[in-house]
Image (cartoon, rainbow, N blue to C red; front, side):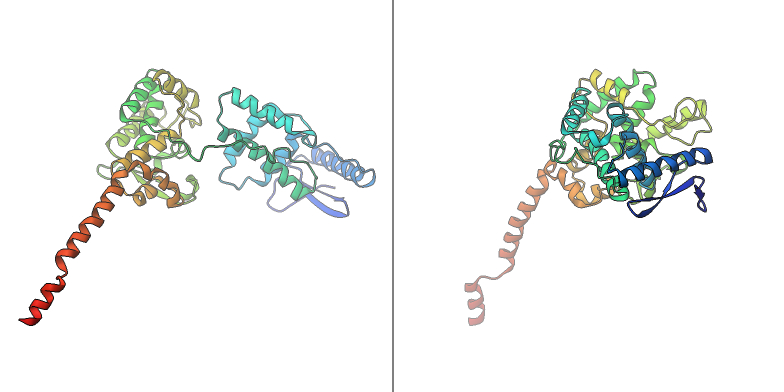
Length: 362
């Protein structure tokens, strides 16, 4: 008989599987539905134990279990999006019957859609993690066809825009429907180095527009590293924010989101518009995340120390920032020149042996 747990709105089932007591949330507040699920699980456990029949585990069942137990993760929204994409291909399939050929077919399908190896790998990793989770927590014994079939990725992307290219991209963005929003996003991303999610999730209470103190605040729950940071705004970035504030006053005064739709709802994706603007601007192989790379490259090229770039971009370690070190060869030249300068200085300061003897004789 299903039972309720304190603090949970859902009914919980209890049954024995392979001599082990299993307590499992049904994920529903409806008692009749919970009874039906418990009966189904009891029957499956009986057939598996006494008839050695392994019940089919559908893609939806596997991913649902994984999503339920991953609700606390900061990346849960990304995981949900990946699940939606995976379901278009694997929906309704028995995960226990998936083969390496199915994984290759999925890879081909996503490549034909123009997705990079890194994107495909993240999606397949979500499926692999879900299978491993169910095997560990529920002992389902599912084979993992993803194992050993991840795609090769470049060590890191090196796609940066010049200031002229950013200008073309912004110009083409403004020509599109809702183009002002996209253009403001592009300028803000390039001039702050913030990630896409950090900007699309930005709320007005975390924006300061006081003259000389313009900044946005990112709390720990808003950043990938889990570390809070404050990002100062230069004149261009502050201008983008002020244009969003003017738009908000005229169209959606009650919205908490800096990047909002006409009804005040949060803008969650700008991919289609961005790709169209990039194509019109003649910028091939450009992704939204490359705006962040562009910000880093401009900073390093202009001589900003890597330690400062690390703090501004919110990198978890200096290793991430060092990817851009090759963009500042002048720093290495300056260091070598200092070695030469220090040697000359030491030669001028240390008396020669003959001079020392002469002074002693006198």
